[in-house]
Length: 312
Ligand code: NAD
Ligand code: UDP
Ligand code: UDP
Image (cartoon, rainbow, N blue to C red; front, side, top):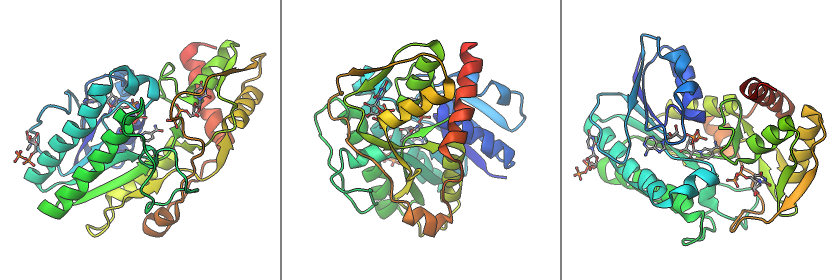
């Protein structure tokens, strides 16, 4: 049994990670400031004797005793991270410094939830870890993209300078139950719109692409990365390489939900990447991992979750 800290543990991915760690028999400290996460996501764990919830903001120092740290605290959807962009950068940068300082004092292993956004609007396709990315430093997505890039820099500097045992995973678009219904991400938006019989809002012409990974597959990869030997730091891409246009996704969701929703086209947000697909060769080699859940099955689970949530 390890004592594991999960920052952002009341969020979408964090809550699934807490479930998994508790199931694996660990002693879990879930930390969150509830900026985008919710107690609802972890209510079912509160009575568990090896689960502990702590309200805290990672931009402030934290003194606890743990063996492993998963650093997930950061709003992840454009709507949320652009709402208070200064706080978004602080969360990534000050949060990383504090969690790395904590890991250094404890000699604990620490994993950073980085993102495919470090590749920006990529001119290399699919994206491999060696690619340095094409990121606008001053745009509306920069608080998130550059914050996450700086966090990666800090992780590798603590690794080189203080011999810290670090892991960096670059997460590509992930979906599943417990996504926030109003966070503006494409999968939750389209499902909620379809269930309510509202128009499906496609930004731009819908020909931009994303590759969607089901949450269970992603959590498996994160846990495996944490358990790799100290000579493996990543960064490692984790995501599902199966790529869809946004229009295809909309049509698939309408087909699965049924109902009378129509497609409507809205302006494309600034700096919206045209294409994104992970090259997961490194994850296959180092983690022996690849996604198992077909998008139809993952969407079915996610639609069922939103049906319950919305009473539809
Ligand atoms: P989420 O918004 O559901 O979860 C983030 C959690 O962090 C929330 O519970 C929020 O309240 C908490 N948080 C935010 N700022 C905090 C702070 N200053 N102190 C303490 N807690 C704070 O998002 P998610 O999708 O679960 O994302 C989790 C992590 O994975 C994020 O770091 C995100 O950048 C990364 N990620 C997610 C995706 C994805 O597709 N879901 C893709 C790439 C990277
Ligand atoms: N820190 C923390 N918990 C700890 C140890 C450190 O939150 O258990 C914070 C501390 O406030 C500091 C940051 O982590 O600002 C970086 O710590 P480090 O030891 O790397 O740097 P220093 O304290 O020398 O600035
Ligand atoms: N998108 C869309 N309609 C929506 C929400 C998003 O067409 O209601 C598009 C968005 O412009 C982007 C893609 O879907 O091209 C994925 O958006 P999301 O915010 O989920 O993730 P990210 O852009 O961060 O990959």
